[in-house]
Image 1 (cartoon, rainbow, N blue to C red):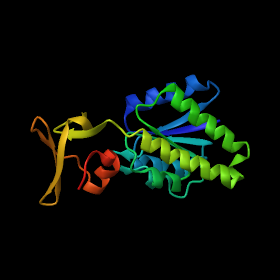
Image 2 (spheres, rainbow, N blue to C red):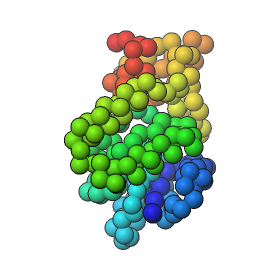
Image 3 (tube, helix red, strand yellow):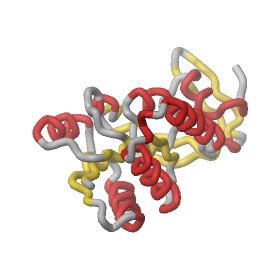
Length: 200
């Protein structure tokens, strides 16, 4: 079985490749795609793989731009949960929140194998899988936000955030230590990430 990985961070891509092959040594990674532009070109000139592991936020856009029109099952592996509905609409069969583990990757591969054995045609099975997907995503909300600050990206614990506020159209994040950062997301997007921990 051939697998394509869409991931713009080399260390994460390499780790994911090794984790997939540890879970099932018979699987072949045929390509690692690092950007939307590269992905569009690759899928336009290569045979479709059997399965895709994909991050969502890439350096030049969202992986949905690559996956549009593709009929390949996708296992999404991302740090955020707000794209779960879009993932389902893009042939998503599972949604792993980073950091991934051998166990979470193995479960996702097992789900793919079950679907390809003919269970995909069972509507009740599909509905239950989607219900579990969204339940699992909500239950596993990330404990931190990735913050772009100067030339670095670092995780900021949600428990350390005092408030979010909108000023001149820009969302500001203030910590309990009175440090201010700019999360680069709208208040609606942040609400999807932090859930009921904050209120508008």
